[in-house]
Length: 244
Image 1 (cartoon, one colour):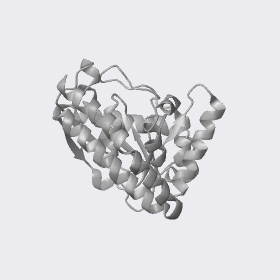
Image 2: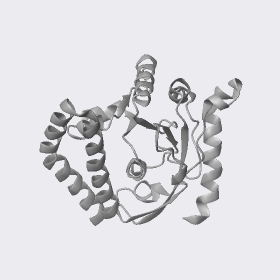
Image 3: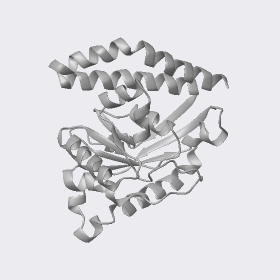
Image 4: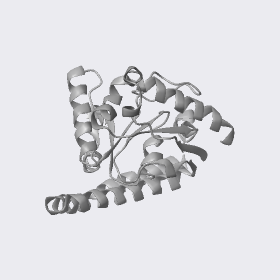
């Protein structure tokens, strides 16, 4: 329980004492949005790394050199833990927004930082609003902001399984022309979800797979990009399972 207490206390203190930083970031954004993007990325990266340190997480990263550095990308990953966001965000080389559930809008200060990081908020029960979020994500990609999605739609609570990947999420890559970077996470639920409410030491494997360019696929295959990416992540997951 000490670890979760440390993480919770740090998050609360960070959100409170970062209020002046939020004001400073707002002012910076009025004059230099690129500087704001980079400074917000650095601040949140630091905070996430501290949370991971308190949690006792060790992370092995494979294939990070495959991630394009000169263009925005669509990251796609499997989702078993709240810590998936922390683990993957600390590795991004450029400003990256995550697609989160709209319920996150209820948390003050946290939502301000999420908006600074270009996160988008998805209403999973409203098709029209969901389409609007997809269009916003396409605009972000075109503006040079990478986007990360977990297309299972929710955290999968069953080990060694995968929920269907929602095909609509992949319209972001199809319409923007950006590469898809599959991300495979092994053992992230061992940090917290496998033994709520305790946080325990865990070794997590994060592997970046070869980028996929939908424009290079036959038109018929583009309709099933989600299934293709899921298969890649599934194969990588079971390949890396023995490394945990």
